[in-house]
Length: 343
Ligand code: KG4
Ligand code: ZN
View 1 (cartoon, helix red, strand yellow):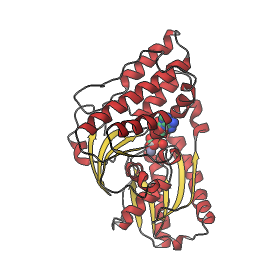
View 2 (tube, protein in one colour):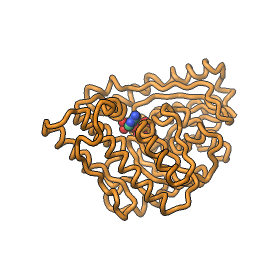
View 3 (cartoon, protein in one colour):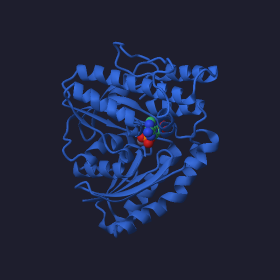
View 4 (cartoon, protein in one colour):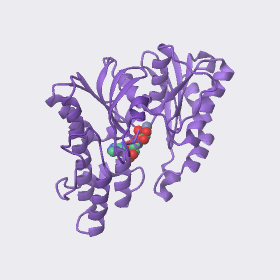
């Protein structure tokens, strides 16, 4: 089985060719950090225009690299949401065009399902169900039960910022370049994680959710005080995020007999996050799986793989499938979410 994956839901334009037996024949990711840097965050309009310019060439590039033609594909998988809607439409419409021209099935992939299934692309031994998935990205921070393709139960989410969003905001407060996660991780190496006292919102609380807004405000105060080295603030902030992720995940692990702890999403590229969660799994005698860092941040290999999994399960989509800015993995949890709880 050969699947083309397309991704443009945020600020990375990406294309990849992946086989049903987990071989990535070709993949390319082109970021837009330079274009957004002057604004200190992603400008949706600029992102969408850049995807329009770049994505077609990336599709040609991966097909050429793998010596494949559109007629060789079994399916075309494109992210159809959630994300910045102008960008989402680019990959989805490119995928529809190819599906139409080559008369191939289209798979509209939920970007979050791309992250959720990415550990199975890297780890052939990771079977369903996997309980528990910690999905930590720029837009989401959730604990999920993954029972199979398309089968997700959300156990926890953030009541304010996502973990990656917290990294990005803290980085901005420290005058670091976007994206903030890698910049904070780099600076934190020169700092002392115990130097700056910062809060751990909701740690030890009986409720399952995450919160990072208070941490961001504390970073703002620490930076404004002038009393601390930026590297110490970065290291202390990173440690506080890790402590929050570990505490909330420990709470969820204690409440279920999950055999495996799985982590995915951009923040899972962080070495401190990876090693703290690996330790947590070991302490709880659970198996642990996390994809390599390049598969944690946005890419099209995970979209192609999610497309391959959905195609194998008989899940394809009509050409009128919509692009969606919002698209929760667990729609039921989304319906009953409390005030202020993010999908
Ligand atoms: O999964 P992703 O690439 O895009 C979304 O779907 O959101 O995640 C991007 C987020 C950004 O907030 C970025 O700062 C964060 O992941 N990130 C990291 C690291 N690399 C990316 N956060 C902490 N440490 C990193 N090394
Ligand atoms: Zn993502």
